[in-house]
Image (cartoon, rainbow, N blue to C red; front, side):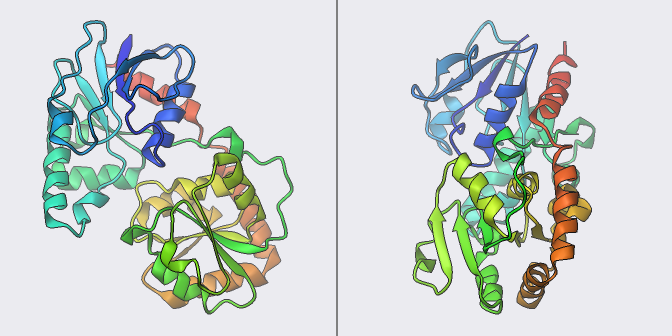
Length: 324
C-alpha cells in the first residue's frame, strides 16, 4: 500500500515529532511524503515537493495528485481538497479556545470538515477522542494511537541528584508558564530552566535560566539533570515532554488535565493548574522528599516503556489497511 502523508510540519515540535516517529517506525507501508524541497526524510520514503504555506487558502486548493497513492494521511486538522480517501490525525482541540475569534472559527470549520470527510480520525489520547466525539460527533470513526518516545530519551544513566526544575514547551497561554513562574518564586534555592521557546520576557528573572530551542540530545541532558519536570498545562492533547522526562529517569509534576493524567498515570504528581499554591507545594515536596522522588522515577521509567513509536506505527498501519 502507498500512503501519501503531509510532511510540511516535519521539523516542528509536537506534530513534527509525531510525523518523524511514524515514518521511522512504520513497516509494510510505502510512504510518499509531500513537503518542502529541503526536508530530511528516512531512507526509502519517496518525496514529492508540496510547499503551500501552512494555514493558507492556497494549501486547501493545491490538489495533491499522485495516481499511485491509495490513501492520504493528514497529520494535522487542515486537510487539502483531495481526490483520494484520507485519514486525519487531530492532536487536540486547543485551537477552539484561541483568543482570536477568527482563529476559533477557522479551527472549528477545518476540524469539523476533517472529521466529517475523513475515512478515520486518529488522535493521541482517550481524553481527546472523547472531546472530539462530544464536539463533532462520529465517535465510531475515532481511533487512539498513543505517541511514542524517541530512543534518545531512553535512560541507561542513573538519575542525577537534581539541580533545577525544568519546563519544556512553548509560551502559549495554555502552557500556564506565568503561574509556574509565580509558583517557583515560592520555592527556595533551586533554579527554573525553560526550554522549547524563546521566553524573552523571562530572561532577566532571578534564578530563571532560558535555554530556548535545543536539540533532542541537549534536551535529554536537561531532563536527566533536573530534579523534576513541571508541566502545569491548562490543557494538553498528550504531553510528550512528560513522557520523555519519565524515560530519562526524571520525576514529573503535571496538572490534572485529563490527557496528562491519562498518559502519566500514577508515575507523576498531578496538581490544580489554576492554583499557584498547589504547583509550589508539589515542587517543594519533590525537592524535599528523596523517597517520593525515587518512587516517581521508578514508576516513570516503567510507564515510559509502554509508549513506543513502533506500537503507534502498528496501530496506524492497521487503520490504513482496514479500508482495502
